[in-house]
Image (cartoon, rainbow, N blue to C red; front, side, top):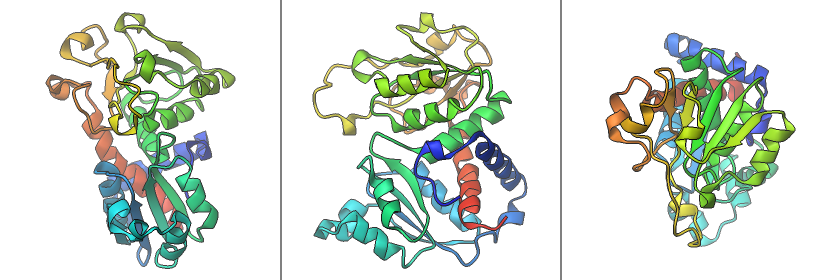
Amino acid sequence: MKGLIKAEQLTREKIEYLCNLADDIHENPRKYSQALAGKVIATIFYEPSTRTRLSFESAMLRLGAQVISTEDAKGNSSVKKGELLTDTIRIVGGYADAIVIRHSDEDSAEVAASVSKVPIINAGSGKSEHPTQALLDIYTLKKCKGKLDGISVAFLGDLKYGRTSHSLIKLLALYENVTIYTLASEELALPQEYADYLKERGVRFMAARSFLDLPHDLDAFYQTRVQLERMDGTEENFHAYELTTESMREFSDDTIILHPLPRNDEISQELDDDVRAKFFEQAENGLYARMALLCDVLGEL
C-alpha cells in the first residue's frame, strides 16, 4: 500500500490482512525485528502527541528501521520561519523512505501526498481524519469481540471535532449488520455528513438522548475527549456524557469500553479495574497495528 491518507483506503480485505499481520508480529516479534532494516522513517508532528508518535517510533525501531523526528514541528522546525508544508515534505522526502505526519489542517496529509516522492502516513489531520487510530480501534474490537459483522457501538463525547470517531465510523461501515449509536450534546453532535455516510451504506444509525436509549447488550462504548483546542469559542456550554461505575451497571458484562486517549473526566478512574475497560490494551494494540501498517507500506512480506 502506498501510504495511508484516509480511512476509505482500507478495505475489509486489507483490514483482515493487517489484523492478522499484527497478531503474528505480536506473537513472533523476532521474526520481524529486521523487516525494515536499512529504512529511515520521518515523523513530523505539528500537534502534540504521546501514543501516536511514540507507538509509531517504537514500531519503526522494533522493525529495524531508523527514525528521524520532530515532535513540535510548529515551533521547532523551519515552519516557524515561514516554510510551506509542501516544501518541508519535498525536503524530508529526500532524507527518509516514508513520512508520518500530524497536522492541524484537515487537508494536510493530502497536500503532503500530492508532492511527496515517498509514502505519507496520516497520523491525524485537523478534525477530519485519523486512519491509523481507526485501524487499531478495529483491531481492538476484533480481538475483544471476536468479530466485526453484527456488532453495536455507541460513540460518546465530542463527535463534532473528534477525528478518531470520524475515521472509525467509516471503517465500521464496511461490515455487515452493524448498528451505530451516538450520545452527545447538541453542540458536539456527529456532523450530518457522517450520518449520511452511514445511511448511504445501509448502516443502522440512531442518535440517542440518554443512556436509557442504548441496549443493555451493547458491544462497545467508544468514549472521546472534548476537543477544546479545536473549538472556536462559540461552544461554551456543552454536556459530556460520562462513563462511571454507576452508568456501566446498566450494561452487559460483555460491553467493552474504548477510548483513543488522552482522557479527562469523561471516564471515571474507578472503571480502570473494570474488566470491560479496554482502553489501555487498545493503546498497546496501536504498536502492533502500526508495525503491521509499516510493514505493508515499506516491507516486502
